[in-house]
Image 1: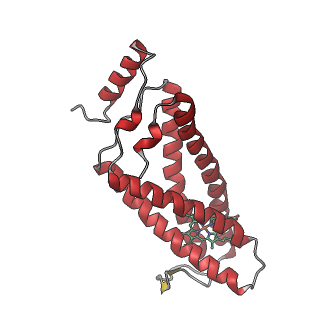
Image 2: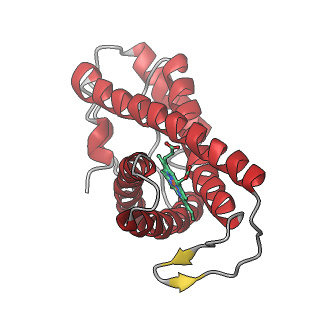
Image 3: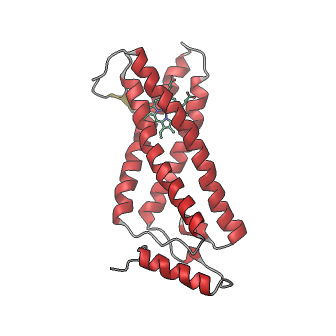
Length: 200
Ligand code: HEM
């Protein structure tokens, strides 16, 4: 079956572009489905907020009361973003996704690799934070509700998972920079209006 984002459609678009390279592409004519757009921006805002909050709170002196409040806020927001990411993965499988505009194969591969790594990091990041938080005596509260405490106080496991959490934080920052740079290249250099597909 040939769907809007099937490989056949994609190959046809690339072939048309190769045959007629001067034709202006207007990728923005086909938009993402509304729920995918809403989830994209909610998750983007949540992750940028979590990265800023996370980097700020770990630098605060130990024992400061506001540090505990910020860590609890970070855990609740992090788990909420995790649920939104899972919802987006399901929605992506079900809802229409417009095909990519014509572009050289290396650019298509770069976009795909960045997106896959973004999804892997968006799932691994909150999982590592939750696991790290499970191996201490405080446990995790979700917007004030204590979650079942199945872990135990284990400094080694805690350090291991928080180590992953820190590595994924920097990977996520690098991926977000690449992702935004790609979007701006399409907007300002290729001028194919790609950004309009995802604008609210
Ligand atoms: C996508 C979601 C998340 C993002 C982007 C994020 C981001 C961050 C960042 C940037 C840091 C600072 C890392 C460092 O400099 O060492 C941090 C620390 C932390 N995060 Fe997250 N986080 C997320 C989800 C979670 C979740 C779900 C939890 C727990 C339920 C959590 C618990 C923590 C804790 C306890 C720390 C402090 C770790 C320490 O004391 O070394 N995070 N987070």
